[in-house]
Image (tube, rainbow, N blue to C red; front, side):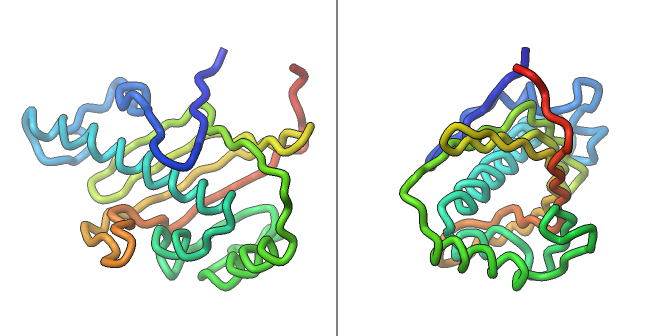
Amino acid sequence: MYEQFPVVAGELSLDPAQMQDPGVSAAAAGLRGGASGAASFDVDIEDVVASNSRLLVAISQGDYLTYKHLVDEKLTCFEPEGCGHLVQGLDFHKYYFDRSKREASSETGNVSVVQPHVRIFGDTALMAYVRLVQVGGKTARYEETRLWRRTNQPDAVTSLGKWKLVHFHRSSPKTSFAP
């Protein structure tokens, strides 16, 4: 059995205790010490998860403006569309946002984040999970790892961006699992 957290426009509720390594304390993760450090650690995890949720909603809705505010302009990634090459910058991704507007479909889908795991290392956060995308009668499965950097400077227009996505790896396994 796995825990599934749907990603929807709005809030994503997660228990931060489920997200962190049980053996990693706030102090061991390099965060500001004491009891307040532990509370800060939980808030950081919630902020990373919320930023990731907003990012996935922006992607599924074709909202390039929100996407642009959540990612670093020097974003790097490995993803199936890159055909094994390291993709750098936002132009590669903007092409797909523009394409999705031209090919707008009336069919909406459902995106779920399964078994999310977040680790905080000072001003850097690593989030790994499986993303399930359901459209019509089909489900696509992606294994994703996203690297976020704390900026402490939210975008003035959208209030987004306390955490910026700086790198991600998304793979689409060739194998599928029987229900």
